[in-house]
Image (cartoon, rainbow, N blue to C red; front, side, top):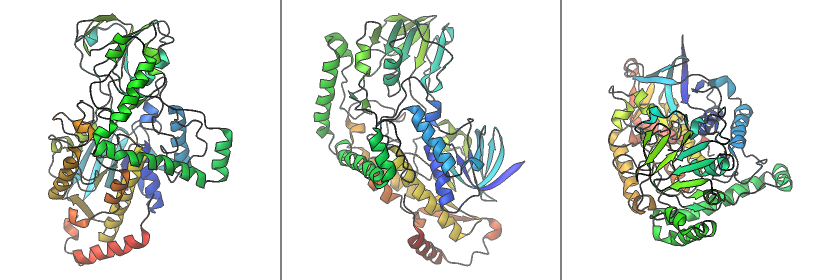
Length: 516
């Protein structure tokens, strides 16, 4: 049986749940949220490794429309963030819309009916509009290491942690030095017999100034809600002021780099180990990591740092690119995710029969981070060039929810059997502006290779500006950037001119615009 809905949201992380809340606030209840797992949470459900926590302050890493006065710490752990998302789900009555065990296998655009036919592992759906909120950190990337199949021990990715496998007394190899690895290492180092860290590129690490939020603070936030908003606003403002150093004047980051170098020198006294852990690129080129326990853990006698990537596995022997060897009982891959080559793109088939992956073979590109040419009524949350290097992604998500809301208002005024398809020229012009601004950012000029860059070296991940700029850019849909499609049977019934339609949409928008 096929379920027909106005909107199908893919994923139930921050983006998907935020979209669901916004749909209800816009008066749209004819929607489903398709989730492949058996609970909400997205990356905060999947990543449950020891030490997992957020590196964005709690009061900024939450929805503006769902403030939480009871965050227990200034930087919250995975379990607290996941509990928050469950709370949002219940508070806004989203459970009737959730369809668990429904992994999208194929989404195909029907040009005759102007709708999306969606095949999932839990059934079939037909939707007028698809909002893809699968997120870039949802599909783990494990390198194809020669001999991996010969390893006799346990192997898993940080985002698929095996909690049934006890690491106590084991020889553990951690591959990678990203945000997950620097949390895993200090969490497991005290219990393992030996820990070997395979490091291709050392990260810049700053102290994580975390503390418990006092009972008095939480009581104040509950009694005087404006104080929660003020705290969030202060955290946001500080990060907005930092953006220019990342996007326009990377040399201004030199002072921060010296502070990070001092942090390293204080924690690591061994000059040989310190040399291994000293980056050779400008701070900020890769995400600045926060930890007060990573360096002390690496200095412990049961830890070895191999300043070379893992190149081969021979049974239980792991061989680095520099020829050094290490024995291991367990391998933990902290090697990131498919970000610029998201698997969902292989499953989305557009108007010309091409998949989104084929359309993006030369690099991801979407109008205002949301609409891809040739994929009508398909919107992305956390799409191309919407990532951040120094602030909270919730800010970007809420801006994209504004865009989604106006998109649906436009469709409502234009008529139900109508679709909007981003014009290729509009997508190209938007992407050209983004890439031109990207040229002088630290992410492009800092001298590193990061997961922000695609296979051709182009930065298709990060937004090269402030969150305020992005909010202004996504405040409303510009119909001139889209082609208006009508179902064949309805074409002759369209009696209103395009100018009349635009005027009607603008009038409605001016009266009913909602900002998060």
